[in-house]
Image (cartoon, rainbow, N blue to C red; front, top):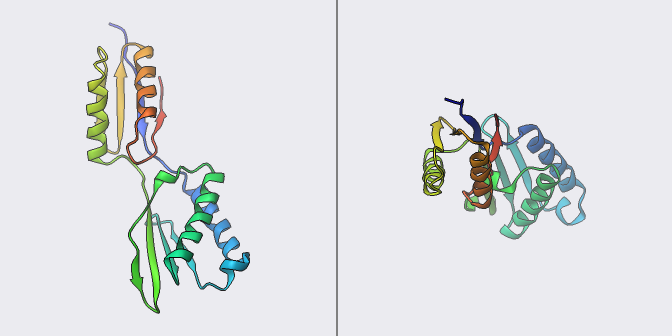
Length: 166
């Protein structure tokens, strides 16, 4: 029996690139004339992988988010990897947004991916959930490439990467 080919489906974000985009955004906030005196602040905690944005209004907060999103795109970080929460009222008549970086594939999403791949009805295609990633096996590389093509077309609310293709 031939050895099965495989690949991993993961959702990872390069935190160094996120930090670089954050630093560039802070620099632009200090220099841009329309945001310079707005009292808007953006903080990034690498440990908890969380952005905290405080602004005097939702309009200013959206402007700061747009600047951050632009910097993230320039650094090739998928915008689906940052999940922004609902606005919260903060002290001093300000608005606070919290954005969390999505790392890894949660159980529900992994189950949906598994179910979708099984619905393809590719012969001998096996999916194994391993913590926050999935491993897909098949005796034929063509089936694996078909599975990758299918997953690239789907939207699971977070970026997916395909690694360890062997």
